Image (tube, rainbow, N blue to C red; front, side, top):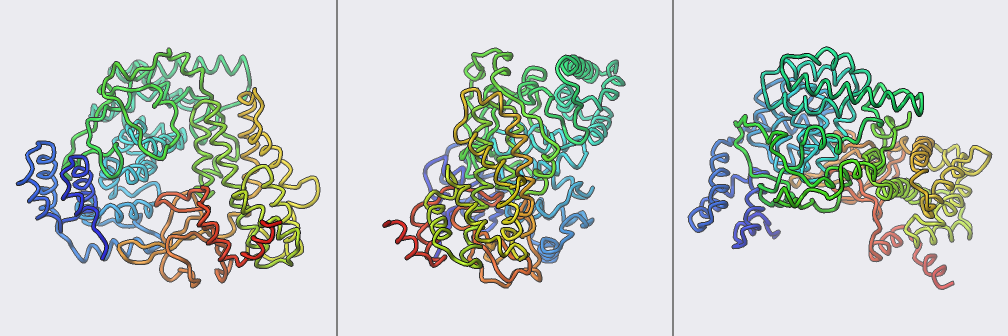
Length: 605
């Protein structure tokens, strides 16, 4: 019998543990725990716990499970159209009022941007959800809705204390093109909601690109001082950048995404709008310290506005998701960096996106897309170098793991090829000799290059001959990453540009689907992880292969065979993570590959 962690948490005498359990109970809509929570209000005397428990009980009383609506929701999850075609307002209200957090997350993944008008209240609910996974997953829909209120909420999430949420919101905002931004600005200026107007206008200087100059000119003398002042700030910033470009380069800004030459997003907002991360007035929860107590479902209260924030400057600039949420000091005076804004800005680099960046960010699997996206968040050279190495390690690790299995299962085995497999596994797929192993595996697969079942076959020819050998630029970049010169910061932009070309040159990896089997509410489901976001697979399209629960595989084109990604790649519920597994899991992989004797023989030699 499994232990219910929420039930156990509600038994705790420790306030923080109780708070975590209460928030989890609310997020998962654990109405069955109402008696337990009610009992809690009778035996506790600390005010924070009592207020939180009482608010949760009030919300639980509003929940009514409707089996008909639940069937519609579960059916929509399994269809290709997902929730984008649902127009019944009752369904969206039901998701807000009664759906547990895992169902809310699945619903978000099935909404294609731009979201339907009927879903906007649901997306707004998700943008303020206590679970950071849900807040992060809803940020792109919030920006792509082109609704000024949802866009303002997405802007506020770019300063979420949970840095993963902040990064998701940041990337969603930068992904908008000039036409979309112009439409949002036009609607915001006409809005009567002062909170929306304050947030969006404060971002005018930060989001300023040349294509929007006309919008700012038109509003530079607006009767509303907030609009006119920030429009003039945006124009002044565009003029400064134009002068810099004329002095240095004639390159034109991107017309499809927020251009990299725009001033450091976080630093600029700090100096111009004085917006920052709120102090930790919210409780710590099982979702991370960023989660706040549940707000009443019917509440239309606005989140904190820009002028109410206090910040630690460093946390606004470096947005690289750590394994745990960051802790934000309460005192405003203790948060401010000793460095001046100019010094703080000069310590960071901003990398320009290349012509290939859009394709990588929108098409490639998350183990490449996520570290790659962080290359365009202004940061220190050291952190950017780490993110670039993580990006290329993920690509090289994926190639080596799939190539060595393809060699073992399909190619004519040789002593040299076998040794490459063993040494590759010993080095955890990456490192100074990783490309040597990859080249050896490609040579063994070259006679089978016409086989179309897995991408290593077709790539093998391009990786073994001629001046266009894909491994040559990859080797040069990898050498730079493993042994960076003292002046590496000066080469980073060129290195990122080269990495973009290299990743796209290996686009054949997109030919095979990456899937995982997992359990949600005790029911087995398959997820398509081939792109940047997970998607549920319709039951009739499930692969018939016996795939272990919570493992990721690469399917052959006809889905009759698979290459496993265990134990180097794992799915955390939002993205695929490439990491170094413990020795015990490597031993399991060796058993599965049936190379134990081979592994031991090379080990002894």
